[in-house]
Length: 484
Image 1 (cartoon, helix red, strand yellow):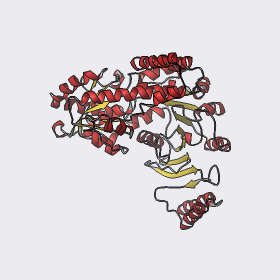
Image 2: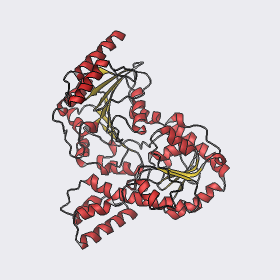
Image 3: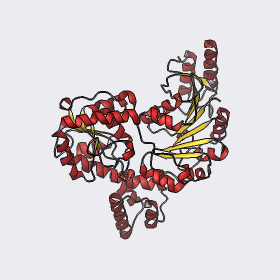
């Protein structure tokens, strides 16, 4: 029987025609395990917060395309998009849902229908969300913890410590620290509400409150903020404060660091914290190869997890750091099942003032810790790659064909580099219709001149040309048949 996988995930980057490296690698590896693979970029079509399809015609066409594809297995990241609808429409299919973010931050309407699904397996990326999933879905529907992972071919021999440019590196986002105050101001709190909100965020910073939404609504009963919006407001504020305070502490013991992320760093560090600007870089690191280049040139790889981790589990950054041959220093607990040993492959800190001693311990015995870094690389290579995660998600199924039929459903043209994929067919929305017909595209497909002229006329006249979608479909279909 042909093994067909339907993979559901939202896009993460602002550029909707591409995926972040983690999703790109995971999708590619899962595709290699299948005979036919359909990837749907769910939030191009479906609003997860409201639970509706903004475009009226999308919903019917959406389900028809899935029904026509007839998947064997449905894999979903974070129960994304229409997973909640599909378990009702196609109850006999098998569903595997990997929560790479904390499930308690996901809207209830996306999770509740899954509880009734009999062919469901859910996975958390660390022990903390796994415990929550067991409570919510029941132990019988919960699989083993699927940790994050790294790209196998980027695990190379490390640079000697003495040749590395940076004592430490950190790459991650900051959020607008004034947003919390501005949001409170918009709610027009009285003095009592203001003090209660201040106490709530202080308590949340020191001891994560999973019932945060309930407390917030008790203080502000008129608020229309959704649960995810409330969590994001509090967690982002706490995360920015934590990251700034930790980087500030490290700056006291070394000026050989590399810190980069989003533009908010420039506001918080480049201007208002001149002491930190000596190692702040305005570079926006997007390519995986550049990320690993920075990490490999660092002795210490710093992980300051987002506040929603509750101090437990390893985010993706930890695996990238360990793959690069650095010593991981992290503020979140590492599960024993990962195979990594505290004080050897990584150091754990709870408060910023612990960093100075950890730094001295590593710098004063660099050769010993270089050996431990090489050990950690072997653990990642042997247990924590994208191939390992793809094997877990497709366990119980077997590919029978030598090639792969790859399909993509998105608002923008997306191409994945999947070895062995001989067809690459997309359902891409044009201005003239909700979905274009099937058409073949690859990196080497040449766009005919007549199509470019039609597009130019459309842009100049500000009117859609009705034949564009069908022309592309027919033209590429003819090319495909000619090659056959």
